[in-house]
Image (cartoon, rainbow, N blue to C red; front, side, top):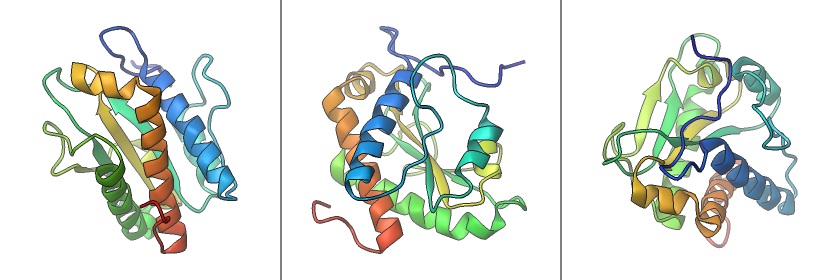
Length: 189
């Protein structure tokens, strides 16, 4: 049985997904706060593990939009990003269309502003519907999960561990969020 929360995957050198996720989330929060947004983070530091996924999901259910930031633990030969989108399952039915629209903005911003391309091992052209993830199943707001790259792949790992690329990822996600909330891409997009 898997524990409620783990630090996720890691690179061959031991750089954890949790560290990557937290760094990108911190940069993203700073970017959005600079734009005047109110931000809800499910972790305020990178010590230990955060709350269980069902708790995290309900923490975000009063926001206008939510994103789960991750890095994948796929095959070492695989590269690229994947936007995981919710599938209607009852509780989240009302946000499926808006979640898919938000996912398209995330995909476009990733292509425009990061060195990553759609995954060559998972999903189709950088998209994957998922009906088995509690964070997507329990959402009451538009939400996607982004696997930003593949940590076991040495080329993706070099990018994912770079503070410069982490900032680029955060800026891409901020642009997608701004586009979703305002109907306009930021000037830099």
